Length: 505
Image 1 (spheres, rainbow, N blue to C red):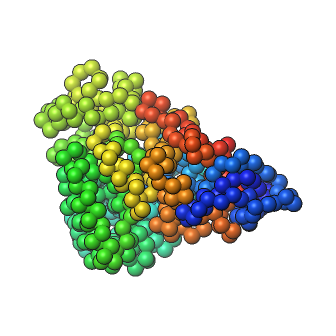
Image 2 (image 1 turned 180 degrees about the vertical axis):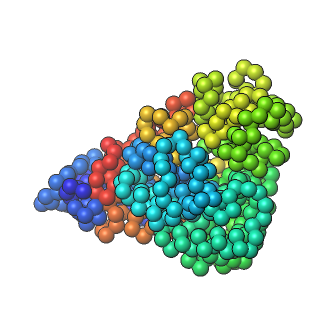
């Protein structure tokens, strides 16, 4: 911070849904908001910006990100700050950068190998110290990921955790909650989280409850067993004494499941009546993105990406997987499956296109991509309802989450989903177009997210809060990214300030 900053002539959307008001905002040399006044005519701020009647909002908070390592490789965090994000909740879907032990270190290093970051930390405290040294432009607030935690104790193999292993997971979790983790995230669709039994989940929830923190989850199923998966988490939360449960990227996947949304909301309301706070995040797209390996059938689904690559080095295994895929997936499936990223030279030119558009058999092509580099083989599945997406976004308990990484502008880490560069801007655009007020829309990308994750120093523009600010045009705010050119910055963002420093304009 080099000096005080004065932002003049703006309409204040403070993040708390209070009515807009015309103000000037002064951020002191310490990076903290000093005052909000109608007139600062005698102010000697070193930097003075004319807001031109635009909206001044708190720095946006991405409530669901995966920048744990990518932000260390590209600390400019361009994909985040270019859409106004100054804080991200990372460590989602069960995958965090800690705790690290001899059991999971080599796997994590290979999993994140594309970023070229040497994992030199072990605990949450050491990870946060590493982040501070790099001065990432978007602040990372990490959850402890259950998959990483489980692997730190018993590697990535399948099977039930015994009492001693569960006790050790709880010990490591307590250590990380005590040293800065905002809560615990589950990724029960992924290896090794898919092997977790209720007693393991319950014990970990109890540990979180004793710290009065939050649990978030990517459910076991967001489709055919959506209601059963949501009920499992709600029941375990209530039994464990947990006070707050957060549903990650809430969705109804598959057209046969679109009608389940109202029943899901009924489950939420029943849980609230029993004392459990329920919130969720949502990205504003109907195409999800995940590893292609997640969709594999049978025994293949239980393998992590590192183990899968080793197995597919054998020709007979590739032939078997291709046969299993042909039996499990029909033509419609491949028409809904889009290649987001891959590193196989034969298929790089097809990034952003559907797998069915590639010459040859779709299943055999998928296996070829996976055998070359399953870790960096991501696909988007068009399985969601736009009507349900908007209904979820409109809920007062829903906030914006990108489910994306902090990435540089040059695309050097590969192709991505457009949500990485545009989710929060598009969330705002949709909310405004749906008739949600500017004040309320801004709160869903700032103050409400700060309240959910107990970030008391940000999310609201008020004296004493962090000088994280976004100046934007409500008429033009929107994402400009798409699957063909996902690295396109959002429109309508005039200026982004973090801790009193201009980091994007």
